[in-house]
Image (cartoon, rainbow, N blue to C red; front, side):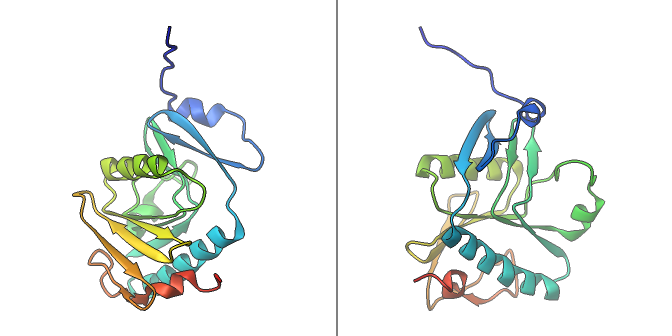
Length: 181
């Protein structure tokens, strides 16, 4: 006989003890544990964050968040590697809790997660209102922009990364992978 476990709510999830050396997210009421990122993952994440910070210094309506916890709804609490959020909403949010809105753009750097886990998380972002998910593939040195309607764009080294959701951002996609061999 199959065992049915009820989904865990964010409130219940936040009461679970932290596990040293593991990152946990709540996806559709299920606790998903991941090992801490390796140096290559962090290098790409930091390169992307740096390019976005330079961009947001010119386009003052945005804030770049790195490893910020987003409470998307009662069953989803996630940590995108990098996110772009509306500056006014960010500063208006209650500072004593998790950020209660979906990121405008979420960025995920692929490392140890399975494709099915990543797809599920992308779906959660889109259901919560995220306008685009940017997926960085360090081994391939490629950037994929995904949209809620299923469309997407791929960028490789030597191509200029641009997206209409972030007007004025123009970066050689290879810069996101600087420092990788």
